[in-house]
Length: 451
Image 1 (cartoon, helix red, strand yellow):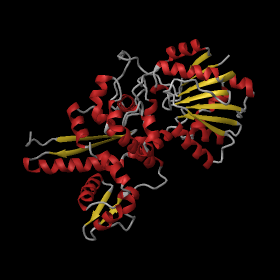
Image 2 (cartoon, rainbow, N blue to C red):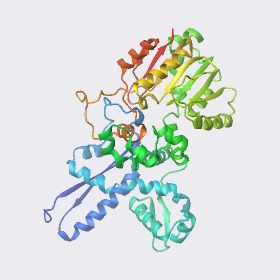
Image 3 (tube, rainbow, N blue to C red):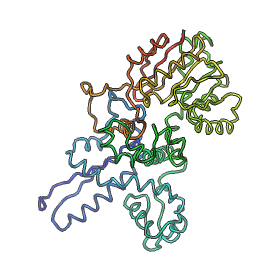
Image 4 (spheres, rainbow, N blue to C red):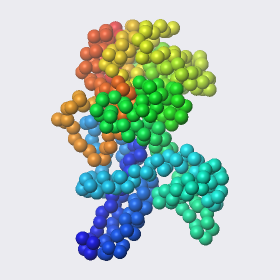
């Protein structure tokens, strides 16, 4: 084998957040003497190519939070095809070799390494250590990792390091910003938690959540208490809803809403309860889009305190108020308003069926007649253990499912269309309807009306 002249195909598969990076590298093994050198070249070249593929990979990405078991694969590239057609052991070996890349990049972000190496002048080793307030030992290792990744280069004549990461992008590069947001989120919400994945599989709860962050029922509770978690988790959650007003424009076409506001109107002229509204970012976007829409942000007291700050900063105190509630405490919630709509955005997956029933009962009792409940998005999911219609896809890394099991919440369970419709009917809603969104933008949702 060592003396045979034949190509070796090396494939990089690096998945950080919603990006998939793939490279094929071709080399020839001609003797035992160059085997080690080729192995090192493979690791360096593969790692370097991984980061460079951020933009092209993003064009075929999935939004993790709406990952569905019945989704078709994104349009395949030749690189991805090579990866998926490679033997299992080759794929696993390269994934293992690249395991440290994501944590190293996160460390560079947190230490503000890119600010320490100005473009185009660069910086010396001592200057970087001083600027980042780190140790020579630690920065030596991090710079080695960045050199191998290709985000940093070194000029031995001037003994200066240069910033290839910023040279290849800009502060306005949306893809780079999203990549960074996803990587930071995974570092705080997944990296250490996945150490306990076997325990989570065995026990059916988010063991990593409590072992890493403390005695919390969900990461949503943790991020309300722990600033370091909120710092890296909240921007990721916000990134799912950057265009929330546009994605929820369907609200103006719902029959019960049209009956109240008239045909072709884009003025809601009513009050919305934003259930589990986090730090108010969604409500702010919706309010700015429609000045006639008043909103109440409901979430944990610590979160609505953040929301109140954001609302004040946006000068929307007259249009948006807040309601601090711990939904784990089974007490009747007393509201100051009645509502024309209740929005449940990105929240039903994390709760048990019993909790969700309790929430929609509360929503029903506080909606005006003709008021609408909107569950957005509503992902199509498999029943537990049912793989009859599941099509394995090597381009998908099951991030969403693993996140829900290992980190999101102990009570995270899939929700299903027919069961949810039945529950809504039992509570007293009518016209429960599942609206199927077109792929690849996963905008499926469910609505129901209080008669």
